[in-house]
Image (cartoon, rainbow, N blue to C red; front, side, top):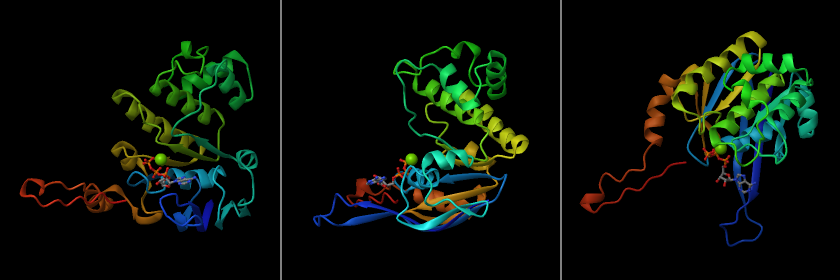
Length: 253
Ligand SMILES: Nc1ncnc2c1ncn2[C@@H]1O[C@H](COP(=O)(O)OP(=O)(O)OP(=O)(O)O)[C@@H](O)[C@H]1O
Ligand SMILES: [Mg+2]
């Protein structure tokens, strides 16, 4: 169980004229992720989803509030300590490493360089072919390929709590459903508490609980059906009256 209590993150407000102004990005956020459940977080661009995910992993430092994992306060722990405690994070924009192959990353994650075990992981993940193994994870890898590498590496860690930030970005259409099935299977068979940040309906439908975030707060929690009215409202970038000369440019956050 991972519990967020009054979690807050703020950053310097560069748009303000005041040099000491700050903007609150995550605002007294309260939520409990129950063990072994599948969560999806969605919300408009810039609403704070990645910031929240990075707070849980310790990449962003909490301004105030607490994070508790299985009853232990981990608010002050570093990224490495949180990783050791079983939290894993799959980046929205994964890093590329010159001179490093997928095999290297997978071996570190799985703590083995045994060929058979690495093949087993690749088969379990199913999204990357075996000839991926010796591909360098550098700038030549395509956008979708690097996301598959990132996802496979996170799964290989066998985390207790796995965070995937937009795992479907750049992924071809016919891989999305297998990806949803794969992450659901990991949840069920490995008992992984799974948190997916996504705009994709396939992930939102698959979630046990869907969280809709707006301006750093929970605007809705429940299932996709219940969220639809709010999502439809949020989709407003309403230029419908433009031809009448009345602009209603409401791009909500
Ligand atoms: N360290 C930071 N310093 C200043 N501003 C930040 C910082 N981190 C995030 N922000 C701002 O906070 C807001 C939320 O960013 P975040 O990346 O969490 O959005 P998001 O919900 O993940 O959006 P998207 O759907 O586009 O990925 C954005 O306006 C972003 O510019
Ligand atoms: Mg994001």
